[in-house]
Length: 177
Image: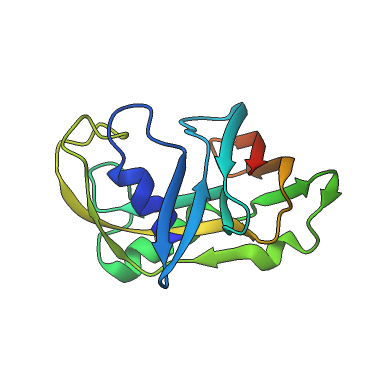
């Protein structure tokens, strides 16, 4: 969860690469996410080699040390973790892979520890002027392995009901080559 938010924070410009390859535990993983700045319905298409695990950032939230991104919480690591979890309270989600619902989606909720952020100096995604900070994340993430060669449709949908209500539906088309 934390690694995906690090990539998002560190992405340049308003349209970061939403199909990124990251190294986690010495293994390359495709990180797929939609550049979501608010509620709505989105589509994303990516192409990945067969055998590469694919991590889908689902409905999630984070709190950072950047101004305005931690509500009434302070900026210690413990407070950032509490903030991220609080923002996510009562959230719901579902993921459908090639027409089959992923069971027990709540078991995919995870929390990150606090992690360092080094923002891109080239108009970072969030528009922050400060270049360094810390963040903690909480939410749904799904790691897919063993997708066969061909085209796969994945629908990730979720709602965070706390004001303001946030509902998002993302349809991913993944071309496995």
